[in-house]
Image (cartoon, rainbow over all chains, first blue to last red; front, side, top):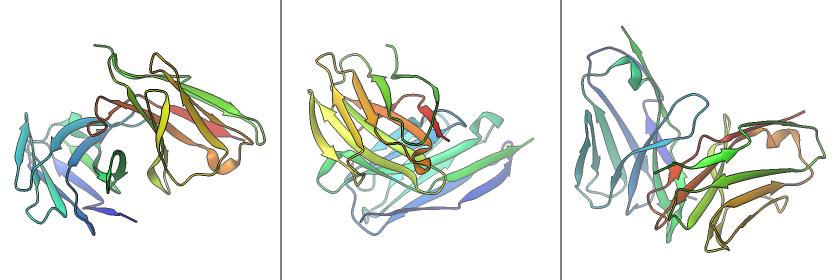
Length: 112
Length: 111
């Protein structure tokens, strides 16, 4: 089946630093979604990408849809304490838009 | 616009019992999907309902079932609970299926 691998698994950074994480797949995706989840809460949709090569921003967050369609990247600039959480990439299962496959997640911790 | 709501937020059940979880989607959204989240398996798709019909199904046993009402509200039911069913159950609603908006989840503990 489709698998999404995220790296790094976790990262500790200092407030103000920029963060980069990525998501890779063994299969081609036509849509990439990035979510953030806080402890005990549901994932919150951050960015949606629909075209290979597309670069989309949402405030300090920027995501890119990889040219090969098998990867995506998320950057966070000037991190702040509330960026702490788990970031997931997700994409629809082949031929089924509503059945999302989720990545393994990147846990971000920000130190002051 | 109000977000996705799920009730109850927390639930403790005993092995062998059954449970029903409820989800109210964002107004206007007709697609409702359910996911199970565990530390070991991550987020896994259970099923999706659209206009009261199950449109997609994940790889879960028949003990897991759901339904959707005419107002798009959805329920999922788990019968004969097992310890391994302890998880965060998440509901997500969508207009088209692609961009899904999640509720806060129901934390189910089976003892």
